[in-house]
Image 1 (cartoon, rainbow, N blue to C red):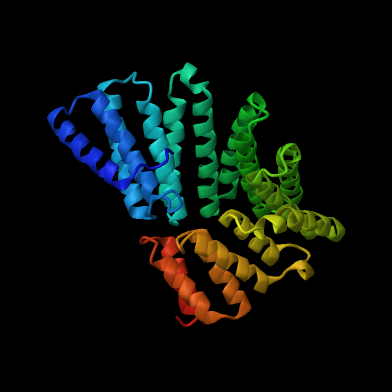
Image 2 (cartoon, rainbow, N blue to C red; image 1 turned 120 degrees about the vertical axis):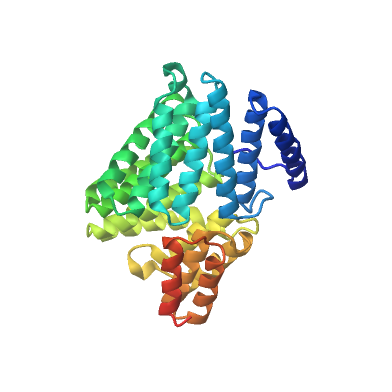
Length: 361
């Protein structure tokens, strides 16, 4: 999405556009401007890292409004070049938000509809890189939503579709770091699915592919921080898989490579939250287990949590679980409470409440 504008500017724009929409309900440019603005509001509420404030409920409300405005533009002009794709993009974002909130059924519904809308675009539009990228993202998100439902076979099919689309994008622009990292991320999701299906050799194949794809980026630019983090994640997972396949020496070697990539990044004064988070996860979860340092992992997770302002759900989950492992029930309950304050009513919220009750909170 676009970087959110200042709140006051967006509030003024919304006031003007709502007045124009009431006066000119069939004006296509007004509908398009409203759809774009609502999407910017959704981005504002979907992050606390670009000047916004995290509020998943409001983010989804604005996405619904954006989707409706795009549908109005599409109804007024069926051939509008942006309208149909705009609807699909909103559905993808709603699906992703729903998945993050623990509502996998709604995520599946929205993402399936988005893919269907993208498939109905004119053939020339379907061949455009931005459309292929949108389909790849939707298929990846759909696969993860199916994973959340425990429907691993459906997840594997969706993720394999996304891998194929991302490979097509990477082939068209082999030097594009963002495209390579997107391919690595969907390979990771497919590897996780294969692991769930007890296809550990298949999972190993995908994790190894991640290290090859992203390894080229790091070789070309060792200071490419996102690529180093993604490569480290690949090696960490490869180590875990090798260990499960009883290849202890190979597991240790892969885990050591993950540490080598992350330790320097996490210990820098300007360390990013992502680097701190992934280093902490590696400290807590690498294999073999004699390499794990959970107490140190908690320190780095706390640093990441401070950078996120205590508003990043995955960091809070990881931190609460780690404190449970360390026997610090009081701090774990505090973290679960922070997460509960952010979550809408959902299956995920009920799971968090149950985790807190198990600790006596």
